[in-house]
Image (cartoon, rainbow, N blue to C red):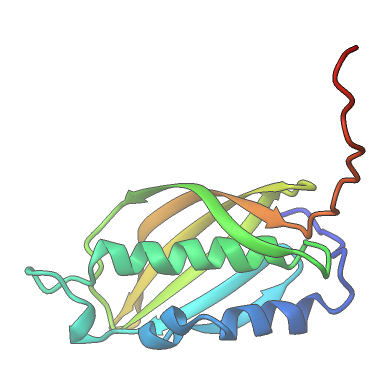
Length: 158
């Protein structure tokens, strides 16, 4: 992974505040385990309330963790005035999500002024064994404040 220089010297506090402002992450019990410029590791404990009909954690829950990991990793490299929004992702499910704890690791592959491309991986931990269960590629957009354009009145032809 390339070492990235954050545009916001307060990236750490900003990323944590952005993450903590998300009720969905609190509902899922997802927490930040590690944070660095352009990368993050999140974790979540198993809950029966997150399972599908076969007892595996639902793919939508795993996808939410991966998406958020991509978002936090990308956000660490954005300017202080930016907010963030996912514009695209692709998830590949590799194995059933059965475990006691789930880890979501993401890293920035290509940062940009507006769009940032990330890759993430989800792992299930069970009985001392770690199994890769899903991958994601995602594109995230820096939502920057818009500067109002000055418009002079148009004069129609004479």
